[in-house]
Image (cartoon, rainbow, N blue to C red):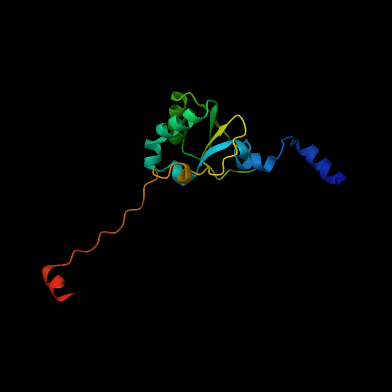
Length: 150
């Protein structure tokens, strides 16, 4: 039997969701429905912003009922930009603001049913999308350095 005090506190707080901690983490949905998550660093990345339409088209092609959830911590211009592109792709969009907890994700795509995908990170699903850090150019050796091995 459960502790009576715990039950009373739960009922008093008004929390009636199934697995509320998981739903807070994934912006109001369950982990099993999540298709793709983007961190805040990824969401502000210029190459991700340019390729967002491609991301939407790819996911829309795989799943007919798709929803995009946006964190209110993104700047207003980014929120509007992502919302407009998702609406062009006919994807349902909402900005989720949890009062109790915050999600570590800036953008989250999910289906309306369980899909149970193991890999949901942007770097795993779209590995070529993120810009790779450019390697340092090697210093060119002059004629005398080549000749004498300097």
